[in-house]
Image (cartoon, rainbow, N blue to C red):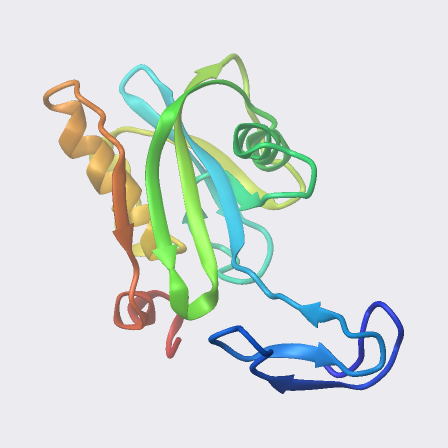
Length: 185
């Protein structure tokens, strides 16, 4: 950030009085610009014994498989964001279950929130997907998954499915975890 979005003056990066971390500060209008993590909301759509995956048509990780998920928009709930992203990426309607995985990625300022969901009806590739398909566990393209968050969510799901108990899983992806998917983080 170089300029204040409130008044257009040049900003500086410093610790504001009474704070404990650096922020972008505008000496012109006094605005403190807080930058917060982005929330990625999505679903793990289930149909019988299969899960729905989308092959990405966009960067990053174009051509790799993912769950339908994306950045939450202002003025929507996490559930609304997850449902919207599922429609945008897979033209799929779902009935949301509970929050299933909450995964912190502090090194890239993201938080993933994936909800279990029951797939309703048909689906097809949205503008951000090359293809969309249902997979049995043994058919999952494990070596072609886009992100470690997706692999972790799927592994939890298939392990939990054996006992039909689906608790909330909270974890963190480190730069080392991420490196095998996207190179140096």
